[in-house]
Image: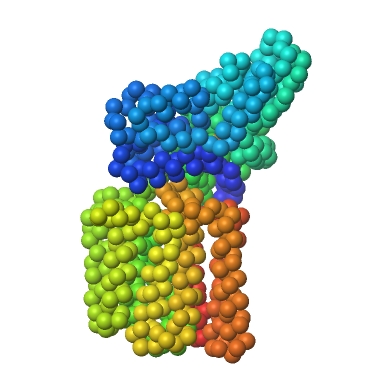
Length: 571
Ligand code: SF4
């Protein structure tokens, strides 16, 4: 195989915003409620994801009559349904949650508006597709579905027509259908309702398919939008293949291919795309040595087990001690590592995701789940025992924060809301917990909590950890894991999240410049000022949607603390 094969993954590949929001909504419902969740039709056309959802007590039904459990929740998926069907559902004694994509709702409104003015509706789409069936419901009985220009040419003569597209329609097909319909209609209103994510995906597909030797389209064989994407690629690229699993890729297929483009339909999860990418790499470059493979697995385990995160906490504690001018205490470094390991491992064991678990997750959180939980509790008990040797003023708050962190994923007794129900609670609690153990504990221990340097270290540590936690949330959302409103990213939305992260970066840098100018530990302030630019680089990477896969992303994010520790080594 050529070692120079260039592999490009479509920036637009994977769940579209509508599908992603619907999945997040359903997963959050399942997470916060013991009730069974049903979706009217499969949430997405992807058998692997459907299987994973079943394990989370989320089931697909074709009709509401299949649901016997009165306590269940029924979710309308992103495609939407006709208004009469929705009214019928809402008349039943079952809770209905609407996850219709807002862009589909916009098409509903467009059709409704013109139908009320007496227009016929012509929908360019697939008449059996759930979205189109839903659209037809808004046409007041004057809807016609056509598949493209040929069927547009055989439309009857009509006075007033509003022509719309299924949101995932190919733009060329829609425009050709519009041109053909003009010949048959006196007054034609053109509503190009192909959604922006679809247009972006198509634009990128056209550009990169033309420039590639092979296009790999990843996604369910029963997914209409993936099939349509494949049709576009087939026309443009010298060769194209539609696969459902990475095992369908072979040496034979990739032989002699210098450029490979991997794309996917709107219902294909990111983790499947990542698997296709890994397999393509494996087949197109010299095979990894067994030592390389082993190292890669050990590293995945180190990240997944939060061992690297614990090391990051040790590094941050070292930075804080330097900031506080405190002597470096090995006991406090160990305390930070154990404390963070315990809480992060315990919470990670409770995480759920739409993604199929990888080998490391299977090992830690399925096969040896009890052992992992035990390790998390043991690390916590050791940490608290350590604090007991540091005095009451360290022990009591440490025990409080640890208890709070361990209870975090669970429902509280006496009807109290669980912590995870509060917006951004995960990031705020993580920042406070790390702020305490990495900066406050050293301050209290040496009896100097009133020193300005301790307060400065706490603010510095808490803000940095808040940024870290938010970026983890972004990474997890990108990897199709459950990201609820307990994450700042989910509660505040992408734009405000990035604005906040850039603002925190600027704030920290300004503080460091001021401190340097005030001649406060100028070498240390200068070292931290430079070290923080690593963070800026990471932020820009994330902002421009160059978010790597989970293990790389988590490694890069936690490495910032090690980089800061190295930069102040002599400060
Ligand atoms: S394809 Fe577009 S309209 Fe359809 S669910 Fe996705 S974002 Fe919404």
